[in-house]
Amino acid sequence: SFERAIAADPRHGAAYIGLGELAMGHASPSPSSRASALRWLRGAVALQPQSSTAWLLLGAAQAEAGDAFDDDGGGGLSRSGSSHAHEAIASLRTAASLDPLSAHAYWQLGDAHAALGERRRAVRHLGTAVRLRPDHVEAYSSLARVLSYEATTERQASLAALAFRAALRLAPTHLETWHNLGEYLHARGDPARASRAFAKATQVAPQSGASYLALGESLQRLCRVDEANKHYRVAAGLLPRSARAKVHALLPAVGRGAPATAAIVVGSGGGTEG
Image (cartoon, helix red, strand yellow):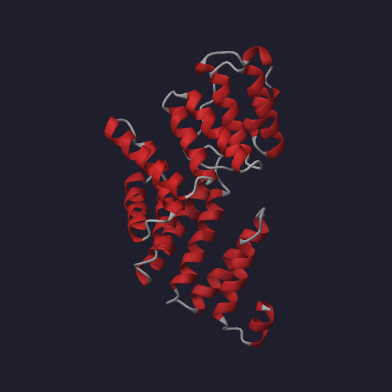
């Protein structure tokens, strides 16, 4: 095991990387598993400072730790989350400098800049990722999401639509792409098409509470009250820590037929954790 390898050789950098990957691989990461991943991967880069893989994994772990401080899925990072995002950017820059052909490093770097609201930098790095690997569906999906933030003109909207189509062509069952497309359409005032995108997201990943929540919000804007209520209840069950889901699930039905001004618009962060 990796622990035995480290016991035999405390400077076994590859074992530190392996333990870091294992800690990151939890289906439902906890604060302790995130802390373990960071501890092992910081040890890995200390032992192997020229390893692009170690820096890439450390950056990913730091970004994941930052996402954990997302304010209820609304896309705004707390102070702690922003600190982790800045650390992630520094690590991922190192990874990209050590391996300039790593599309994965540029994708993660773009996502980290997007989390901080640095959208031009995010677009630049995500564009580099898809140029290096035209089949990188996660990079295309992230690029589509970030482009959609800036889609205030027809040209920008067309670019966002092209990126969404490219991502879905590569992976027609990619949860984040369907969810992000729904958010984009919802924000552009098209709840009917948004609801279809969110419905697809819930079909692809029935465990995605954020997609059920967003689907309910789009249906609410369409005054489809009973359907919205059903999805809000599912979201509240899947997201027991989400205040937004709980509020929606508890709202009296009489208020749910209100027009769009009463709806809580899905946050622009594109997260799928609610």
